[in-house]
Length: 74
Image (tube, rainbow, N blue to C red; front, side, top):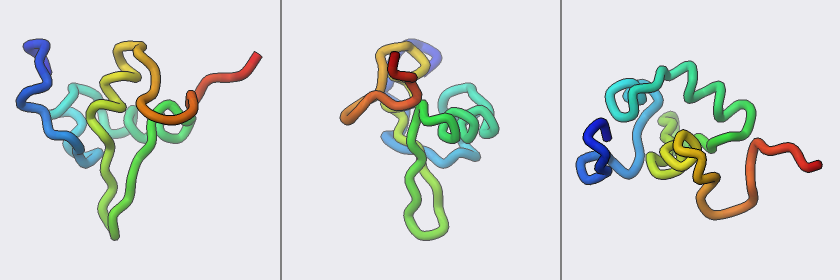
C-alpha cells in the first residue's frame, strides 16, 4: 500500500493487523466502524475489515456498494 499499489494487500484483514496493512491503529479502525464510516464483519469469533472499503474511506472515494454510511443527511 505504501508504494501506491494494492497488489500485495489482502482483500480482508483483522483489526490487529491494521497497522501493518494500512498504517492505521486498531483503535482508529474500531472508531471509524463505530461512527459508521466503515463496516467490520464477523465470522465466528473473528472480526475482519474489507481493505478496499477502508481505502475508499481514507482516500475520500466514499463507501463501496450500498448506501452512504457515516454521512449526515441535510
